[in-house]
Amino acid sequence: MMDNMTKQEIMRWLQCPAGSELDTLQARADKTRHEHVGDAVHLRGLVELSNICSRNCLYCGIRRDNHAVQRYRITLEEIMDCAFKAVEYGFGTLVLQGGEDAGLTAAFIGEVIRRIKTETELAVTLSLGERDPAEWKMWREAGADRYLLRFETSNRALFDRIHPPREGHASTSRIAMLKTLQDIGYETGSGVMIGIPGQRYSDLAEDIQLFADLQLDMIGVGPYIPHPQTPMGNWKDGGMGDEQVPNSLAMGLRVVALARLVCPGANIPSTTALATLDGKAGREMGLCWGANVIMPNLTPLKYRRLYEIYPSKAASTETPEQSRDAALKQIEFLGRSPGRGRGDSLYHLQYK
Ligand code: 5AD
Image (tube, rainbow, N blue to C red; front, side, top):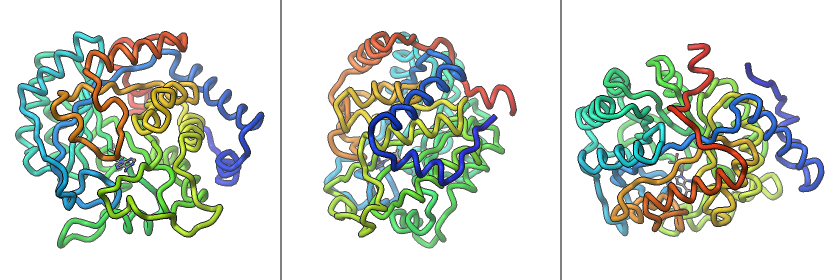
């Protein structure tokens, strides 16, 4: 079910010069996407629930110690408005994302899930960070379908350097958490940032192999974008010379393509971070390099600019309707079709 690729092979694709060889990678990824998940582009409405976060990740604009951010938490009724909008727009899934905010209580999220599940047919994806497995279970029982938790980098020393653990806690293994999420029965998604200072090509190759080892249902990747109000925003580079992975759109596209080749049936979004680096063109290119999902932003506009995990986030001023129209136009332009239904993972349907 997964295409095996050696680490050397992956590294060769990551480092080959632009030109005919790289064109082969794009063509292979696009063909694999077409053969395994077809031409439908699934639309997932994204709702950013809260920018309150108890964690202090060194790269993230909504980290706890960034006091320049005005904090918000959405209401239940506002979430339901987004859900009805998603239905009206023909989206199959609502993605609920937020910081590690204790105020997004297990009971509140449980109630949100139950309401969406009784009042719509939407699939529900949660992206709420590292939470207590008992809460993950409860939300699954309330009807949540999918969970996203990026492992960010498989290099444990690098991960620990940029993710201070919770106060009084040891550092955590997101790999172990992903297995827990799978055991609970979620369609499980993960991913990485590309071009973290200190990230080597060999690290990135191992990340890509880990996508396959974990048998992920969903894989979301994007270039690391420095945020000036974070400690990492001012780091120059990791002193790795030409082993350092660049945080470019071009490198992001290579990783999307390789993710498609090692996990042919996965749902792979063309992410906002890809779109941020080259206007809207980045998102379109993602769809041509193996991606089959886009996540138009449905967050109410008054909150949108406050969810600034990195600067100049694409579409931070677009209305939900404009986000939908832009997505549909891109899909049509590429000769693809908007997905119908929930767009579940093939792996989850077949094997789990
Ligand atoms: N640049 C790029 N991606 C970022 N994320 C957080 N901060 C940044 C940044 N500065 C990504 C992380 C996280 C996801 C929600 O956003 O990968 O998992």
